[in-house]
Length: 176
Ligand SMILES: Cc1cc2nc3c(=O)[nH]c(=O)nc-3n(C[C@H](O)[C@H](O)[C@H](O)COP(=O)(O)O)c2cc1C
Image: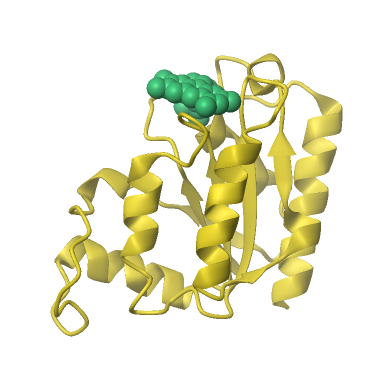
């Protein structure tokens, strides 16, 4: 069981990326996970004849998604939506279809009380159109994240750690 994880934040010290690192340590035995590191290497999406000859970074991104059993996305909210870098990455998958029927969990996290619910909704809307298999029991909207993940990227809140563990387990169960 292999999970391919994408953080919507490219910020050094990102709380969203820290949550994905925590998720990899909390995953059920037998689970492997990769956190995608190359969001900034993807060119800006442009529709065209890219199915046979995609740019190398795009081809690699698509291949890693194809090879994964499940996808986990954790995103911050910028101005009531998902960050542009994440939307750009997902746009590269619309026509090529790697997310079609792929078990996928959406997490959003924000320092605010909303937990990034608008970012969550924007990703959910896009992945629904792309016909990813969204796993509701694995979904999370994580509020007050800056008080629950410290500067070292450690989850300091036991209840959040428990939520992460349960959500990853639900994603793995859905993909098995
Ligand atoms: C330009 C900008 C816009 C933001 N807009 C929102 C927003 O609409 N809603 C929200 O909850 N947080 C917003 N934030 C705060 C982010 O949620 C916060 O910076 C978060 O920690 C980013 O995630 P990261 O730690 O993974 O980088 C915004 C931050 C920036 C820099």
